[in-house]
Image (cartoon, protein in one colour):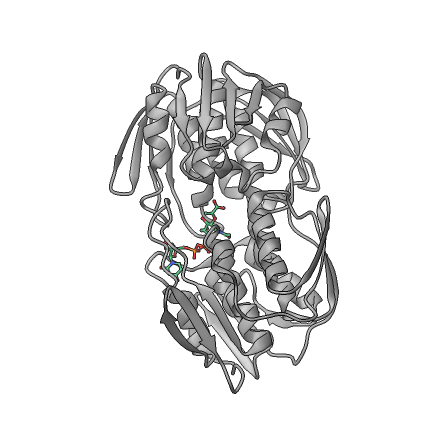
Length: 422
Ligand code: EPU
């Protein structure tokens, strides 16, 4: 298992390119199952989650070629059973359900297991697919879907207890593009990654309107075409480096970003006193630390609100920002595993009932820490760069799930990190 040694008191300076979005790539890769025609997808990040998805597509029978960020997939002949061994490694594999069911009229996918960031049920995914007429049996840990007479468009409300569902909206949208008639998804997720999937499907010939809003209308078509598509920049990777730049930067510029996707993180950085400047086109951003940083309050919310996937990184920043910051995660109220680890480095954080109360301390000290999930690990890297001394981050595979070559990017900015292979 690799670990990352982070040398503290680092200063980051210079320019890096932001990778393609992991969370846009995953459903887009799954959507290639909807056609027997070749699909080319560009800027797919080289992270273990996208690699698992490609392995799943191969196991389902698709022909997959990868050459750095460009992936060519042709799902001429596929089977309907997603292999448990691959599916269990990544929750996002459930987004093959919609495409398999739409294309083959049946699908068998394992129920995802527990997840460290909290309870992650699939009831809304099932509600959506049932709404289109699928029969669903759960047996032996698998979900078996059948739609012997095909899927039929319907009006379906996907509102959940914690708001809209991103992958649930994706699954339903992918199933509905080949269903007969009109589907209306109410309370849909409007995240940029959902919009990117919709754009991909539209370029394949799907009829979709309203992606990005709470109501998506889909008119089914009988088949979809070949496509050549470039995924959007990863707003969470960009946000993570923006926070790093505010914590330990001396002018860090990020290329290949999308300003509209970064509003919530930008607003909090500015409210905390840091300087964020986009170029006119909004695809390049430079961040400088402010002279008098201050604590802020954050509440996570669906897009365009503050993303839960940036909560841990901002918690790391506020750990050494003067004042008290109150951070509430309404989407995943149990997603605070990073707080105990950052506290081991000297932070003063109290977690209570979905809220972290962070009292900024003057400095952190490096320590051996344990990565618990993807964004929590990113928070530990940020804390390690800021701390005195050396931080050893164990279980690095968590960060490799979603950050493309993070160690190389930090080195490129002048930070000092070492990946130790064991
Ligand atoms: N939910 C339900 N029932 C469902 C589905 C979701 O109650 O059937 C609840 C969840 O438990 C949660 C809320 O709805 O409280 C939102 O979850 P959502 O379904 O939107 O999460 P997801 O689609 O499984 C994606 C991202 C996550 C990100 C969330 C929220 C991908 C591959 N994953 O997950 O990203 O945190 O949306 O924005 O797109 C990450 O990249 O680190 C990550 C965890």
